[in-house]
Amino acid sequence: MQLGKRYPWFFWGLLLLAGEGAWAQSGSTVGPIQGDHTAEAVRWLERIGLAGERSHYVGTVVMQQGDEVRVSRIAHAFDQGVLKERVQTLDGAAHEFVRVDNEVRCLWPQERMVVVEWRPLERFPKLSEADARALLEHYAFSLGTMQRIAGQSCQLIRLTPKDHLRFGHQLCVTHPDGLVLSAQILNEQGQIIEQMAFAEIQVVETLDAAHLNPSWATDGWRVLRTEHEPIDVRGQGWVFAVPEGFKRVREVSRKIFVAGDVARWKQTMQSVYSDGLATLSVFIEPADLKLDDGDRAVPANAPVGARGATHAWSRRVGQAQVTVVGEVPAATVLQVGHSVQFEPAK
Amino acid sequence: MKLVIETKAEHGRAQDDPSCAQRLCCLADGELAADEAQIALHQLLGDRQARVWWDEIHWVGDALRSSETAAQHHADFHRRLLDRIEREHAVPQPQGLGKRGWQWLMHHLFVPGVAVGAAAAVLAVMVMPQWRLDAIGPSVDRTLEAQGPVREPAQAGAVVLVKDNSMHPYLQAHRELVPTHGVLPASAPYLRTSAVVQPKREP
Image (cartoon, rainbow over all chains, first blue to last red; front, side, top):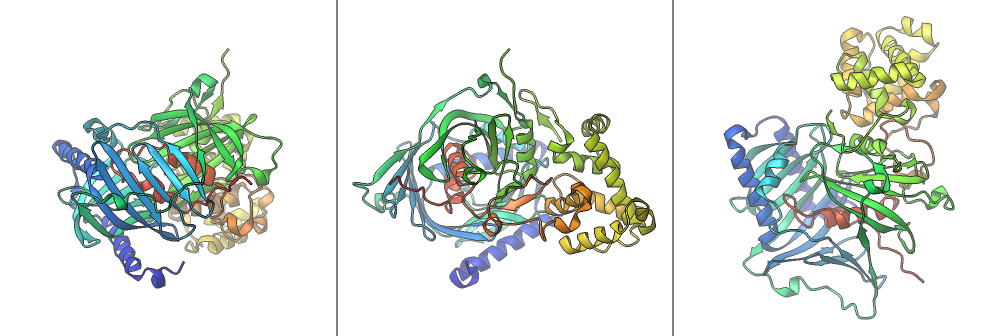
């Protein structure tokens, strides 16, 4: 995609943001908040969590992963305790996500298909003080200067990892509300490897329902529901190590489609972990010996795969295929992947 | 590097542990934490491949310090190593680097997590059997789109930019179940996977 030609406004915006990242590296931030100021960092994080959940807004957001850029339209509302959101992709294959509470419908008009994803129950409010304090165990919080994004003034916030097992994050949030207008993920060299930013945004008191409704009538479309059941992966004899601070969020048994073909799937165990910013999943599934390498979703023993901040690595453990995916450095998915062992109950 | 051992984790054979060579490099440079040094020493004592790499790390060091010393190990190795480094990553020509240069290279290329791509290139030089430098591709960062499915064993630390569909089922499954708690917008997992292809409909 020729960024400069198609999205000149955003191209220059990204350059400015990248410059901001370099600036942050140079140490000209206001400085880390430590000691007695931890409470201030916690207040900022709580405010950001609350604004992300409770605000009503509609806007255009640009996502950059490496040299790939995608533009989407987002409408977000929180109506009587129910989160409602619609994410429309504006380029590439037409599709959109429509979320109401914990159900997410992905509409594919060309395929005339709706994929219904059911997210396990998430609590509200989503970010507690304890969550914020736990996050600060592994990231140093610092404030930068005021910036301007999508016509709004915003406060630059940097979350620097305290080890090499996670990426840094840089946010620009409205002041004093804390709504995230841009989010960048930085590697150890301070280079931006993934970023999203609003190009324009309207924050409103109440959002018209038209912004949240699906773009297409789906009568007669095929409906595919992803299914997953809770499972105890360790109870199945599988053990592995995750970096400090990553807590188990859920473990399920589910289907993984082979090569995106809904007619071909493999039953897979998935363990999901999060440290409050980064997440990672460990997938364990039978290595189907009837499939040749070309049919495997991720070839065994391949190099680490990367898409923006997301890294993935797969290996064979006995008769199983283990795949680790997460917004963490390559070294982290390798370490987690290598730690996976099968220890059958004696 | 602290890991919480939720259940149990052990370091397997050096051949299967891509961080082993990096760890040995750091040990050679005296920059390894005590717990990691213990792992490295354990691998050195118990694993033949680790000892081979240990020797090779010092060959690389010798080659960077002096072409004469390197020639004692393998004819032409010094020239090919320098060619390889220059071709891959435009690292400053390390002629006459001396001890300081050696430490610089070890620190910047081999410290875990630092300059992964560059480290992979030099690690590839070290771990490739029989010094088959010419067999290594022109770049460590390759796209699956360009070269088709990867069927070769993993090279230590190699990172491949994925632009085909191989990761999509896992990205989608990951997106579906990660928490949308907290600091990042709830839409972030969906924006992150907005480029994934649509599933094929059953006929």
